[in-house]
Image 1 (cartoon, rainbow, N blue to C red):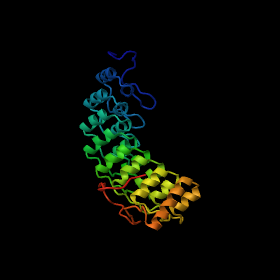
Image 2: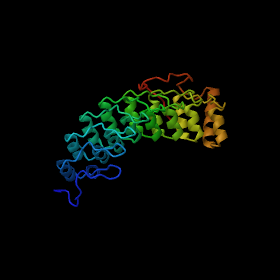
Image 3: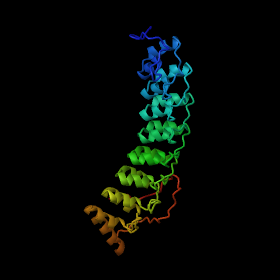
Image 4: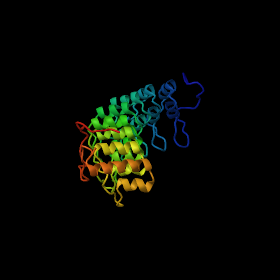
Length: 305
């Protein structure tokens, strides 16, 4: 074949899993081979047993030139795999901004869902791809579209420690207190994981600092794993050190139980300050604070050490 050295099989040949030469060429980013195979009659709609097409693999590799050729030849932009993944999904997963832009310009469905209801935006947030995230939001992606378990793009970004993504989502209206099925919010998960920069961004939007549906507060989550910097952030923002969790333990008692001496000492000092009225936080938060507030930045939140 012209421009396709070493390839001598005819274009309609298939592997046992229905992988075609066109799919292989697209997956490798071999533009000349893709052109030749299409000229020889290769089907751009051919799918492997997994449902994936040549365009899917071109998108996965970020091969924009190959994708353009396939789309021009009639490849369906939203052809999905058996788990619901489309070319847009794998482009978002890989952080291929140019590919995402190309697919969106050809009408790729920004609201497509995988079997677990994860969207392209969720995948981009999970992998920390902020530029891809902005493209999807500009195309109308819902910042609060959740998986089956209730996890939103903000929640997964917080869990992964992507503070830059958290910031973008919040400024695009993401609900700061969206709750996963286990009762955990983005703040709770960030405090649990020790992501101080994420906590910093979330606190700007006045998240719920009180007891959540899981029977814990974000402060309990930070204390449980000995994250002293986050404990300080939360207390400075107004977290109540005296709220007991579902097992009846206050953060101070939990710190003692977990043997985190520095955390215990800090909370003990704060508790003493509360009793004396010295150095008390300016912000007070009740346990029934609204869980549906949109991402609207607070005018000021004290974040000090």
